[in-house]
Length: 240
Ligand code: ADE
Picture 1 (cartoon, protein in one colour):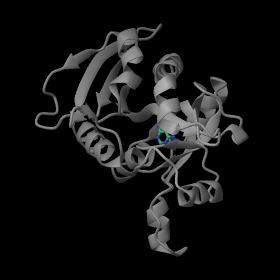
Picture 2 (spheres, protein in one colour):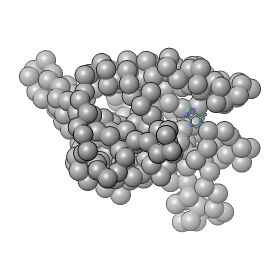
Picture 3 (tube, helix red, strand yellow):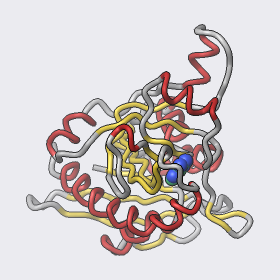
Picture 4 (cartoon, protein in one colour):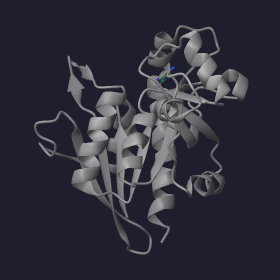
């Protein structure tokens, strides 16, 4: 199996990168800033899989987050790597009222945008929300690995405005991020299955300041993400 991870921040990926000892493939995306790390994994039956980890790279001295960078990285990576599956993994905000807690890791069971406000229930409104499909075996994986599931909602901001919250609530969103639906949009165009693995850094309804909570919990949530992703990879590399 050819597995492609799309991860926005180096800090989110670092424990994972160190665990697998994936090596950077220099200049793979030149002149784009995206970075590729790659290794081969052999399962217990001797079957080989390729693990590709793509990061968005940097601009203005910081890791590129958000939909634009995620779309560029996903398009460039799928065109060059031709993966069997894309996994968008990273951190997210979530809601105490839905039972979320810091460093809890979820599998996505749907995804949409929560800050593209186009009126109407017609084709334009539908396009704005996105609602792209996720991999059809995502629920099976979550069930077998005993991982919770939640709907990913994506926007371009770390904070949450009241209009974001009403769209999230109306659509039963649970995991608020800045890339998921953009990655899924590209996957939908290129007919590539997508799986989400998301770890909670902050609780959107806790009253805490989001950036502070995010920064405080980033390392812990990234460790939890590594643990979850090693289980996901074990699962994927052992199915036919
Ligand atoms: N990534 C981590 N926490 C987030 C939040 N609250 N909103 C958007 N992206 C996030």
